[in-house]
Image 1 (cartoon, rainbow, N blue to C red):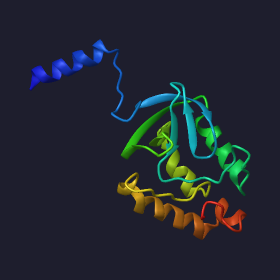
Image 2 (image 1 turned 90 degrees about the vertical axis):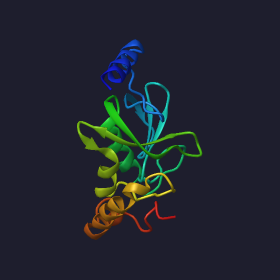
Image 3 (image 1 turned 30 degrees about the horizontal axis):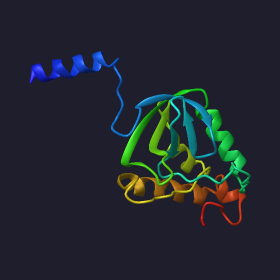
Image 4 (image 1 turned 60 degrees about the vertical axis):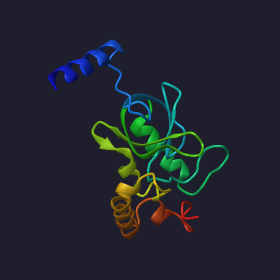
Length: 159
């Protein structure tokens, strides 16, 4: 067993210590927050937050609370090093990586939903393991009328 561990460690060092998951990078610098729920990483990968669907604010769209969700996301991650954790599927039908994104030990996906900057979006199988957790966060945001739940009628991410 020790020999296997030494071989794995040697292999990691030989390839520069790269710790990519099978889906994509484990850490990366965010070049741009494209909108409230999508990022562009330094390596050129686009990342879509798992289980979070923010109102639209890019490509000419301007949903209620979209600019606020975009600004919240930008302030948290743009120009910062983030950690990425992947769920049951690596990418969506548009080729974007699907991930839970953390910065400074805070998971952005959960912050978006619990503060009302995003609704829960579950597209099976991606996010199935944490769906109930996110739905609970959304229900609390609705009760407290945070973000879209107090500012928008109808709520744009409930299409």
